[in-house]
Image 1 (spheres, rainbow, N blue to C red):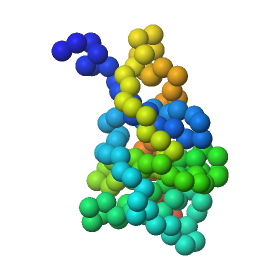
Image 2: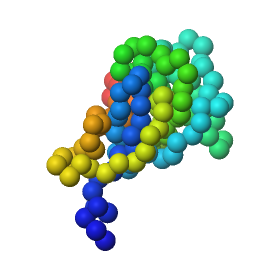
Image 3: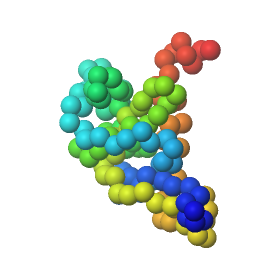
Image 4: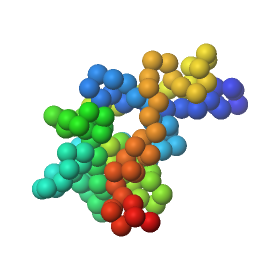
Length: 132
C-alpha cells in the first residue's frame, strides 16, 4: 500500500458552479434522477422522493439547502448513508473522486468540503425527533 491509499477521499459534485467534496464514506451510491417525484406541499429544500430498489428515499436539493432556491434540473442524486436510512441529495453534476491535496491533507484541491449527512439530517428530523 502506498501513502495515497490512506489519504481521505471525496466525491466531488457541482452545485450552481461551485464544487463540493463529500467524504466517500458518507456516499452509498449515485443514481439518475429518473423517477424523482415532487411531493405536493413539501418545503423548497425537498426535491421529492425516489424509489431505489423498493425503498422510498427522501431527496433534498443541495442548491436549496445552500441558497433557498430549488435547482431547475437535477443532474444526479447522491445517496448518502444516514444510519440505516438513505438520504438523497440532488446535485447538478458528479465529477470524480479526489484524494487530499498534498499540501492540505484534510481537503481536496479547489473544493469546499461538505459534511453532506449532517447538512441533510438536520432537515429530515420530525418535530417529535427535534423535541427529544
